[in-house]
Length: 395
Length: 104
Image (cartoon, rainbow over the protein chains, first blue to last red):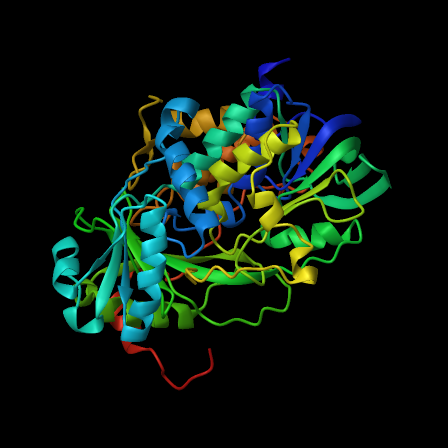
């Protein structure tokens, strides 16, 4: 194999046959490809419609946290952050993980009493989250406006990563293991020939395979439609901005759950943050930038951190959330299509969950242990009503 | 030209960094931007964009197979997506616009 063929950017040609085709070269697709490759199952072609990092994986704020309202998510994220901590040595790339904590500001007594139960659950799982008084929160971030909140939740072990190198790390490691990555290649049709028998048509040619994994994120409903499956998730535009770089001063990521505001200081010094802004949500992936976001974001950010008033915004951009009805992902095979796997509906936290989901998915596909997440997150839960809503969702 | 020659002065991206990205097969400016961090600093690409496009034009011309490898890629070097605002704007100025009565 020549050096050129090993390059992660663009495998020379599509094979006519492969064991696995992964649709979507985001962190889920590349993470699963890497974990499968590590287990000796590298006969994989990853098909990405644009470039690596072009979707939500290259557009998010890089937050990684253990503060959730469901035990499933808490435990998954404890494991995921542990994987993140070893990522640099395992994959030889610096992902700039900084565990400065997450500080959730609470604006009402009602919200506080609800979060007390959530924090107790996190503590039972071994997460050291504490409820802070405003005075205690001011010791963590002295620049906060003390009149804007009644309490705060703080877990010092949450953190932030830089998403881009994370993705390159997975891509290059998967490529080294023999995985083929095809960028700027579109999937146009999927024929189901029978159980574990598919023909995937792309703009680069046609490939037969035993297994198709739909890791297309916000585009996953469109991919599922190609095999006649209607998914309940939908894309939602989420906007975000970065300011000019400042001397490091802000340790945790700060978030206000009631408005969907969050912001942190990156290792490059920028303040990076976003906020919930309503959108049309008609099934189209929209990535345009809006002035309304800049205004809503700036006003809310300054109400929490008035000292940032003269700091200048350098750029804004948008990424697509892949929103599922109950806030939990959609995993596994839909009924009737053995060999077609779903990895979607992560509602803006797919990036932080990818390391742990990729590992357990690869275990499952290699005949290993079946993590409880696959039963809880099966597609059929929306028919039989066995859902449990995750409420600690930002944005 | 020395490989320590700077292409992006805001983020300290050198010619060697860009050539490494090109060597890995990243021939589109959106890939080079996200692989090297070029163009994401205080000038937002105003200083590095032209140089990078020239380097990519040469690299793309030297790789006629790219059409087969990346059928959906753009065929000519292009600037990366411009991000608002055009010039840096203070948060306080933007916050003052909230709720203004206008079409947006």
